Length: 334
Ligand code: GN1
Ligand code: MG
Image (cartoon, rainbow, N blue to C red; front, side, top):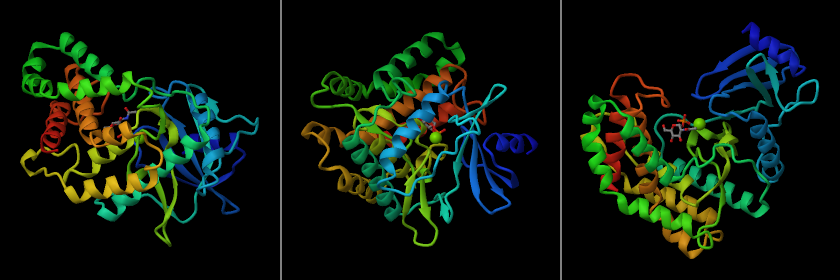
């Protein structure tokens, strides 16, 4: 904690209490309180994934300028030198005001929370699309399904014979979804029907702050992957993570079910916020969004398995293969 204390001084804070917040997997986050009772979030940005942290910070400034008219947003605390972030050796740190009386949902979710989450991320895209702030692209081609298919082929070409054999059934099954790849390519080739939209690219309930007195939405958070993309990403990712009865690490594959009531709640919540935004072609495309994200995520997990697990954290040898089977199990049912 001594290090965090040193970092705090760079932001002009003298902390009296420092508590780690352990939810996120990418950045290191701490809640810090000072003698006057003011609270802050101090966070180390993972520069292995976010290689241009200055751009991430500049995007936050742009996004906040729009979003503050719709939500109560955290404020960025500049350093004593008025910089957006503090560099300490190889580390990059930033600081926000802490949102009092807030919480993020974890664990099992209800249909109602699914609706609220989808509605919030829909509204996010609607208000940002109207304002169209100039944003840096933080992760180029992040949800580019063609790129993910190419990366899977490359991983296949470089894989060990053992892993290739283990992956054979999944590779075969993925071939059945060539139609989805073709569909994606059609979307990408027709920007007049499928314009670039501003999307969050990590849409899930734990990336929304709620008021713990009223249970209403305070604001979306973790805006770091917000960038332009095609319409399907956020609704698709929410379907991928909330429609299955079990999460992506579940290995009792036979127990996994698709929950139609959640699919309906998510679609309603999203469309209630965004129906005025989309072209007719995008509205049709959104019906494929869940399948598209599952297909893409299955390819990403399998490519990582064939690359000997260099991207996702794994807990055991076949973890990425099991995650692939899990995603294919859901995709088959959808
Ligand atoms: C990564 O770390 P987390 O869970 O927020 C990944 C997502 C994947 C997800 C799958 C930057 O997100 O795209 O959907 O794992 N984020 C990045 O679990 O690659
Ligand atoms: Mg994340």
